[in-house]
Amino acid sequence: MNSDLKSHWENIYSSKKEDGVSWFQEHPKTSIDLIEKYSTDKSISIIDIGSGRSKILKNLIENEYDDLTYLDISQEACSKSKISLGLKQDLVQWYVENVLDFNTEKNFSIWHDRAVFHFLISKEDVEKYKQVALKNIVQGGYLILGTFSENGPEKCSGLNVSRYSPESLKKIFNPEFKMIESFTINHKTPFDTNQNFLFSIFKK
Ligand SMILES: C[S@@+](CC[C@H](N)C(=O)[O-])C[C@H]1O[C@@H](n2cnc3c(N)ncnc32)[C@H](O)[C@@H]1O
Image (tube, rainbow, N blue to C red; front, side, top):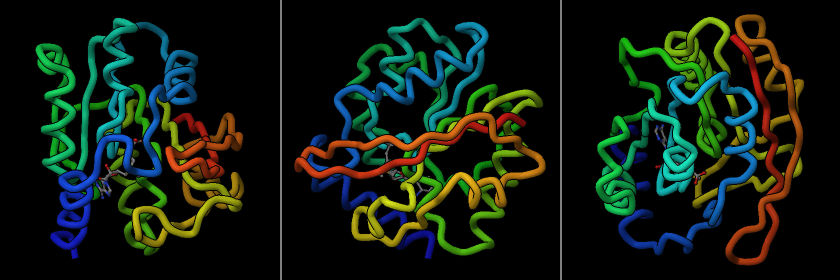
């Protein structure tokens, strides 16, 4: 199952152009604004879960954040992201693995995930994700989660997704995480369609 999932994403990133996928963003404004809002200073540790080929880490480097970590299941996405960062790739720690198997001693002040958590369908995987996040986010740190809302698409990249309301996310992440903010926002895809996202911020 895990290897099927990995080959699915390897295939996407080998065959599609950067802006040939629905989740492409020229500038990940909502994510950057939220990270700026919840970071106390530029030296805090930030991880982008399922970063793909997102420009988020490039933007954070430009904004002078200096403790940045990339994680994605796809080696292809990771290699392409490294190339686009050029020499600046040394400013990032890189992990190619399934977030559910992520095992590091490092803790993060901000855990950011846009459009990854919603691919977890089973209760077991959702619980596993929560436990990994819990273990790796510092006490007082933030979990920034961008999922499809209840009005979002039912599939992404050909895979089923779970769609969320603030209440359904609270049920999953309470009581260890407290929701402090939640809002919906439309993402305009490169194909001129809208995807309704729910961004939720939790504090551990
Ligand atoms: C819809 S894309 C979003 C990419 C990026 N977050 C963005 O906003 O542009 C989902 C990403 O999550 C990665 N992914 C999916 N399931 C994963 C998992 N279980 N562990 C780690 N990465 C995963 C995929 O390879 C892909 O890059």
